[in-house]
Length: 247
Length: 379
Picture 1: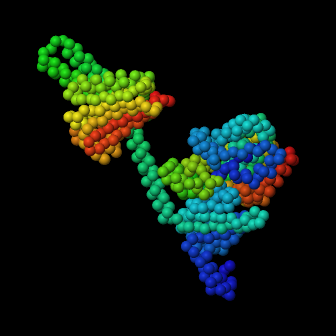
Picture 2 (picture 1 turned 30 degrees about the horizontal axis):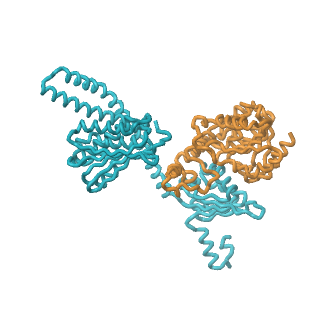
Picture 3 (picture 1 turned 60 degrees about the vertical axis):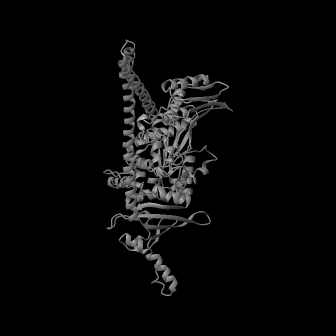
C-alpha cells in the first residue's frame, strides 16, 4: 500500500492513517522529489514540469521495491499522479484511492474546478513574489553560509519546508494541470474520497470524476477542508477499509 | 464576551477585553474544525468589516485567494501535524484596503483525547516589512546578476589568456631558433651582443608565457598538472643551481644537502619551483652575501629551502605574497608578471606539499615541504 502526499507537505501527512493498515499491508511512504527530506539536487525542472514526471517516480518506486497488487493512496495532486501511473503501468496496481483529488482546478465552461484562471494566476504570482509562506526566499543562501551556522538552523515549520523555487514550480505544475482527458480511460478500480467543504477540490469535482471514471466509487465524507487524512483520520480510515474489504 | 452584555464585568476584565479587541495585532479564534468563533475588532477593521460578520466562516475566508490555497495546503496540515506554525506571510482578502500583507502565527489546543479543541491565530501587519523584504529581494537579485556576469567575464578573460599565451609561443619559437642559427653564422662582436640580447629577451619572454599559461590553466580549474617519477633529488638540485650560477656568474649559491633517499616528484615542475625560489633570492637578496640552498630528507618528509640575506618583507606584502600578480615593491620590472611565487605554491600543492616563507630584518627564507610517501599526486 503506497501513500503519496500532495502539494505543500510530505509523507508526515499520512501519520494518522497508515498505521491502521500496517497489519494487513506492506506500507510504502515517500516524499516527492523536491519535498520533505528528498534530495533537492535530484529535482529537475524539466522532468517535473508535468505530472507524468512524478507518475514515473511512483512506477519506479514500485518496480524497485517489487511491489505487486498495489493499493495506491494519493492525496490531492498525487491522486492524479497515481491515475497517470495506472495508465502507464496498470499491471502494478490493484486499486487506487483518490483523496481530495482534482483533475483540473480551473473552471472551464460547464466544468467547476473551484477557481477561475485569474485566481490561480494570483496564487502563482503571490508565490513568485514571495508573498506567501516563510521568509525562506532568503534561506537557501543563508543555509549555504557555513561561517554563520546559526542562520541555517532548522526552520521551525519543518514538515512543510521546501525550497521556495521548487515550491513555485510544483505549484505551477499542480494548479495548471488539466488531466480531465485521462479519466475516461481509467483502467483500475478506484475510490474517490471527497470532503464536503473543500475549497481546493469542491464536491462537484468528485462527482465529475466519478461520472467519467469507469470502476470508480465516490464517497462524500463529513470531513471538511482539503486534508481529511489530517482533520478526520478515523472517517478516512473507515472509508478506505470498507472499500478495500467490500470490493 | 462582549463587555456591553456584561455590565458587571470588573474594570480589569473590561480593560482586558478592550486589549483583546483593539490590540495592535489581529486575534482570531476558531473551533477545532477551523470555523471562526471570534475575531477581534482590529482584524475586522483591517478587513473593512465588523467582527460579527465572520462568525461561522472559516479562517481561510479572511485571506486572499493565494493565501486560501496556501492555508489549506500548508498551514492547516502543519497545525494538525505539529500543533503550530510561526511567522508565515500571507495576504488578507481585498475588501477595499488592498491585499494587506500580514504575518500569522497559529496554534492548536488539543484535548485529552488528542482531538483539537480550538485554534488561535495572531496576525501582525507587515506592510513595511514587505517593502523591506522586497528591497532585499531586489538587491539580492541584482547582486546575483552582477556576480554571474563577472564570473562569465572572468572565465572569458582567462580563456583568452590561455589562448593568447599558446599562440604567442609559436612566433617566439621562430625568433629563438632564428637567433640561435644567426649566432652560428660567424657574426662580428657587435652582432653577437645583439643576438645575445635577442636570446635572453626571448628566453625571459618564453618563461613569462609559460607562467601565464600555467596560471590560466590553474584558474580554469585544471590545477597544475604533475607527472611524478622517482628522482635523485641531489642530482636535480645541483643541476638547477648550476644553471642559475651560469646565468648569474657573480652571485654565490651555497648548497647544503642531506639527502639519503630518492623522492617522488615531477622533475620539471620541481625545477620550475626551485629555480623560481633561487631567482627570487638572487633578485631580492643582498648581492654581497651568498644564497643558502638547503635540502633535507627526514622522517618521511622532504624539505628544500632557499634563504637570502636582506631586509624584512613588509607585513602587507607577506599576506598575499603567494597570490597571483603580486609584485614586491616598486622594482617590479625585474619581477615579471608576479606569477612566479603563485605558480611555485601551486606546484607545491600539486605535490601535496606546502610553500611557506619566513622573513626578519636580516634574512628571508622560502621553504618547500612535502611528505615522501605522497599517496596520490593530483594530476
